[in-house]
Length: 212
Image (cartoon, rainbow, N blue to C red; front, side):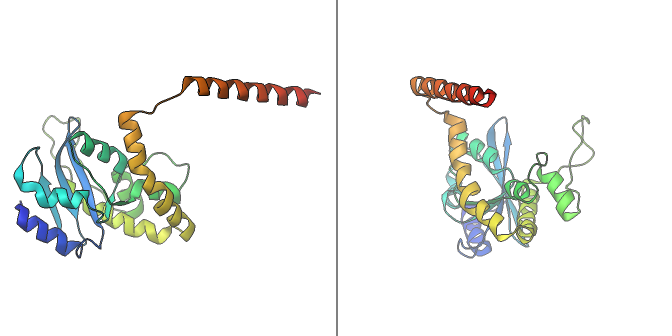
């Protein structure tokens, strides 16, 4: 485990002062953050987390910074982080969204399925049916490292247009959608009712015109 000062230096060195993206995996239990897996090209780190601890200044500063982070399934993890009182910014790439842009219309992917399909490797998992699993699952740090590798692979396969959609549309929407899903949205019933009536009348008019 890296202490706060060591972690701060490690993050700065691995990201080259916040310029290079690092992989990030948020570990959780019962809807609360338990730790962070961070992956660089050749090194990884796992940082256990608990609320109201004074030795997470460097970690929380990096999480809340614009230093680019690569994740897999970022929206779900972002909501868990916020539920734990943490802000995560700088989410620059989500391999699930990149995979969807590469293969639109396919079934929902997971980190495990992406690692197998795109990298031809098997991400170690424990058997949920075993009371005492014989195999330990991959650590969050290893998962973060795989997210980093997947991003490099997928970026080479996506065309320029798809990459632009990912960077300018899909990724900026992640924190917006996370906020909407956590807090809900306000609906004006009057306006919604009038819109429904208008759409119904337009549909009826078009149907009548077609029959004539």
